[in-house]
Amino acid sequence: MSRFSEPQHAAFRALNDSLSFDWRLGPYDVQQSRAHAGMLAAAGIISDVERDELVGALDRVERELADGAFPFADGDEDIHMAIERRVTELAGRVGGKLHTARSRNDQVATDVAMFVRAHAGRAVEQTSRVAWTLVDVAERHLDWPMPGYTHLQRAQPVSLAHHLLAHVEMLSRDRERFAETRRRAAVSPLGSGALAGSTLRLDREAVARELGLSGVTSNSLDAVSDRDAAVELVFDCALAAVHLSRLGEEIVLWTTREFGFLELDDSFATGSSLMPQKKNPDVAELARGRAGRAIGDLTGLLATLKGLPLSYNRDLQEDKRPLLGAPRALVETLEALAGAVETARFDVERMGLALGGGEALATDVAEYLVSRGVPFREAHEAVGRAAALASRTGRALASLTAAEWKGFHAAFGRDVARCFDPGRSLSRRELPGAPGPRQVARQIARWERELAR
Ligand code: ARG
Image (cartoon, rainbow, N blue to C red; front, side, top):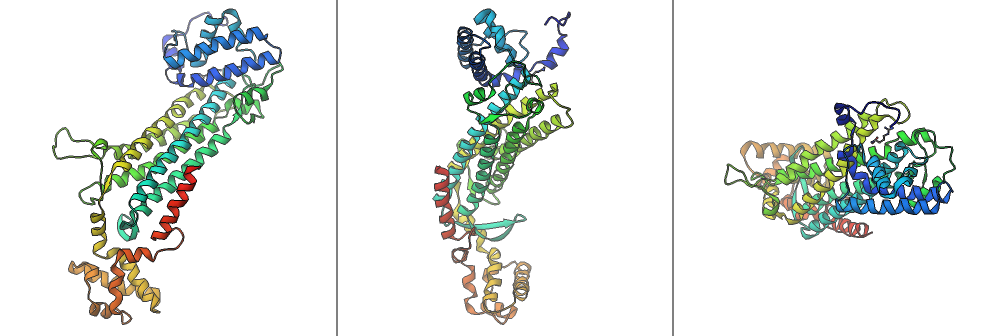
């Protein structure tokens, strides 16, 4: 660059270079350059022959990047400059026309929009696939009663299918968010130039159409400094990762000897280098732990944007690591966790045993009294006293005799024992969204319809 008489200091170059991570933008950069060259020719700014020479060189660059044969050079600061340098090497002097009426500022903003669009689209598919796996596992374990928990204490009966479908709800919200992010990212900043557009008569709409984007940005200052689409994608990834960490935590708990609800397939478990008996749920722990990185990506990106004056500032280069890394980390977690759940063996007996003592049916007993006209507070109080007795004497709530129940409230009859049948309890929970078998079957049918779309 003729403005400078000294080469860059090595220490500055190390800070300045982004090629080691932004090479992932290569395919988008080539695609937008092809569209840009086409538009320059259509607008009469370059000739059709020149366009063909540029496009020919770009096609070759695309192949080289795909094959890992692209010859990166020492001075390549970022992927945009590397591609332009290579195009000029291949096409000669006309290569210098590719950057006409384009700045790296609108160029990188366009790559970011394209990247977000592509990866949000992929995330829609991947979250659907994992949701589908969970629906499938739920369907294979229909009507398996288990305790539901609040405060991690046994609370009320639910079914394994209902529990798994709770995670499907989270994933499907993630899927909708990715779809929204994809839609909102589809605006082309190209033609905003460095910050103030261009004196040349570009056809911005044509480039947007060519790139499959739905329109062009409306303010050049905003366009080159806006990273909202990137933040949204990274946020979507962070929230999905948080959801997966919750599933991961449950797998960790459920595989303990103490719970024993689930055993991971050997292909998704690890041993210990020291303790021969160990079978560890690393897959679930990593899913839990990765959420930390995902949250870090989001907060890091937001912190980079905070307080930046308009328009482009070099700080924005720091958007790349979170943006390029977050979707990849999420996909790995999604795929591994889906495989782990798909191949896991659930233990119906252990789940039944956890319900066996009857604690999780205490509310059913209170509702039994309500159905006999007892005010709920009074019923709650009576069953609470029974639960205290059971706990004090180390007995199961389900083992209390009819006479003992009668002692806690006069409205109890012999048929109170029926309350302790978990299957019966579940079959009576048929409000919309509740764990009753008919409700669960309806939800499974709904997911099968929705996820097939
Ligand atoms: N590598 C840079 C980035 O990612 C490209 C834009 C550089 N623009 C500039 N004016 N220095 O932000």
